[in-house]
Length: 321
Ligand SMILES: NC(=O)c1ccc[n+]([C@@H]2O[C@H](COP(=O)([O-])OP(=O)(O)OC[C@H]3O[C@@H](n4cnc5c(N)ncnc54)[C@H](O)[C@@H]3O)[C@@H](O)[C@H]2O)c1
Image (cartoon, rainbow, N blue to C red; front, side):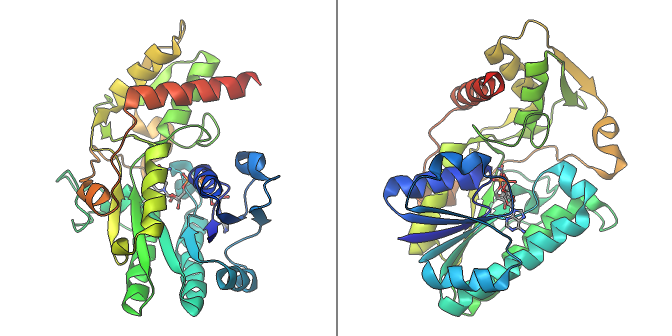
């Protein structure tokens, strides 16, 4: 099978590329980013890295014509990016997604769209089922542009599904593991990891009681591969995540323990100190993952303790390389 993965040089995309290469498939990655996370695949004859953008329509058309399946992961991701550059977030996540869907529609290629738990916003009723409400703040607050951009992408997906295109939407919940971002930026794990490597304190926002459901990369990839291969998933949105809640404070303590830091400890900070006034944290995010288990046939396998230990070791090795 030939698979196109937009954003395939990113965290999730690089692991997804590994999975399809391991299956014996041919993978085309279209990404504007660095090759660092897919460097190990470059000498594979079945792996093709195209350093370009989803705004290159001619290129997208040519790629859609020759593949069997399209994963659309290219996006502006990460709180610091979407708070700093809402224009680019909306442009890539909305217009880029439209470009990919249009090309896929022309050749009737199935699309798996990477959405996010952020689409539920701050809906207080957890766990979130796929048909639950989105509860968002005002458009004057940039923080909501990522959630909105992904929700628009989802609407386009379902609109194309109505036109006959096979499409599946995946909503990821805090996926972590080796190759996640650079340390100190991006997501909770890498921020804590950077602080641990420097022997600095782990900055926990507020009182740390806000919870996340951390999903190890191999579990997320298993669900992602299944979504592409199972036609039963066509026309569906599916939460991809573990339904075990962990508070940010518990997670910080787990990382301290597994890393074995002699110098770092937890430091509580005000949210404004980190993100300014334009950010609003979500107190609880929990997926109802029934559809992931029933429709995709994927059970999460890696508990947080094990996954965090694997990821810490990977980042520690990288830092000393
Ligand atoms: N990792 C998670 O926990 C998580 C959670 C929710 C949603 N997601 C979604 O999954 C997808 C992948 O996320 P990730 O964690 O791997 O993030 P990532 O930032 O590592 O990957 C995104 C990739 O998209 C590329 N990209 C950006 N603009 C592009 C463009 N115009 N053309 C082509 N490529 C472009 C980037 O260079 C990057 O490599 C994203 O769509 C994201 O919204 C991830």
